[in-house]
View 1 (cartoon, rainbow, N blue to C red):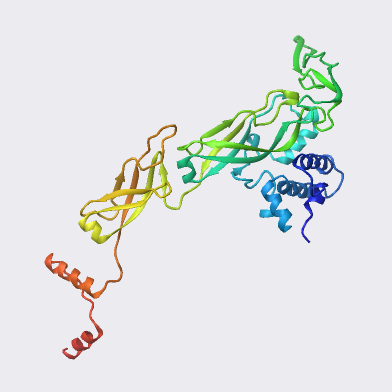
View 2 (view 1 turned 30 degrees about the horizontal axis):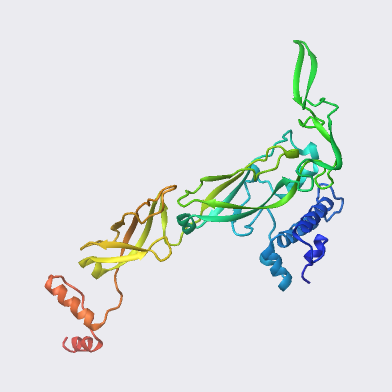
Length: 379
């Protein structure tokens, strides 16, 4: 039987987006392998993420509500593309950081912050078609991150909560330890182990974020990709990386553009390379032809000189890829493939035989079955 995603998430079918988010975080706290004693916690946590992948996406949710099936099998965060953008998550935080790691960091509380109260940058790879690169495009990227907590406005405080000075470091965020060595007294300064550098703690913490001011969440952000961007170039979306603790600075989202191979064109800098078929008659006599360009309905004019040989390259200036942040374009280079027909009509064949005779070129004439019989009889 098909899975009931609403039941897995623990919400009513009329639940709104905010209720679905909160239910997801609540269930994740219960089922995450770091905190749950259930031997099947890992499988249940994966199932929970599959349910949230669908119900947090308006299009997938509408399809599920209508047909009762899971769109695209909901492969889960940290893997295949979400929404409108083709996104690779293997380099999240610079090294394989997925939703499981995000929750692990969250459950660690202040102890899971790795002495970093400001948010870290996050990295994703965005796959683009060559046509999208030519025109420029806007892509929606969907990913998981520690986002500012909306319930407490990132303060980490509950309704009657308040900040208190850390008793260990007295608000300094660091502690000094003294050690006696054979060289004398040595002093070392380290981040406070109690508040992890924050210098304060919360009494009456926000129940949603447990005093961190940030929560694991599914983020959607629209990224504008300029025309002419190169493979491997990066775009920076300020403030959409990991949220800082209790309103501290958020990191940025670093989007690395990856351009997928094209069926017909190859890009070389700002130039486009292609192959074009030219008939042997056009190659001999010359011709003006046109081929499809990178833009929709664009025709690239090419002049085929007389006597063009197989492998020759034709050039159309200004019909290549757009230059980044410029109105100009590179060139279009087409390598000629002279198309030799395998079948000819009798009339075409007779004409070519006459041409061969005129040029004093020997050709092998294919004999008819009747002529072959006559040749045998005549010895």
